[in-house]
Image 1 (cartoon, rainbow, N blue to C red):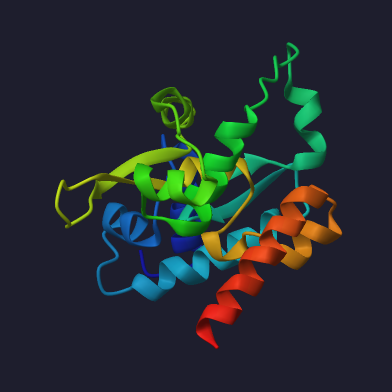
Image 2: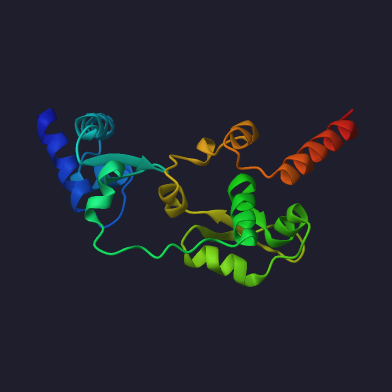
Length: 196
């Protein structure tokens, strides 16, 4: 496998046939390209450009690559109507806290929210595959800490957590309630006074 076109074709076939998204390193190991690791990155970039205007796209989410249907064509593939279950406000708050503060313990989540968090709330997020147990904090009691998953990144169309919107973007999109906006402003002002 020395021809660049052969490598691109081999990478394409590997990603297409994979049961789950793959990292470039996993693709390279599968294809036996040990000393040609850069060739996988180049092939992925070529394929991403090739599929950019097609019915399927080659996308990278959390460092892993896979094919997905172009968003504007997804409706053509649905055979039955999806039953959309909305997250409760508590689950939405917990998910946001985990995403913006990970890794985070249940006590830290409760401190940020200002109320207790039911165990079922975290269970719902873990069943959805969006939150996972990331280990234990090295403090007395060794509390469990939580983090987001690649499924979370994929579901929300994020390449990494760095793509999460900031406060200004949330305000502009109208996603912050006026009460929440006031609380965030008061908290930031309080933190500034403490640091001064």
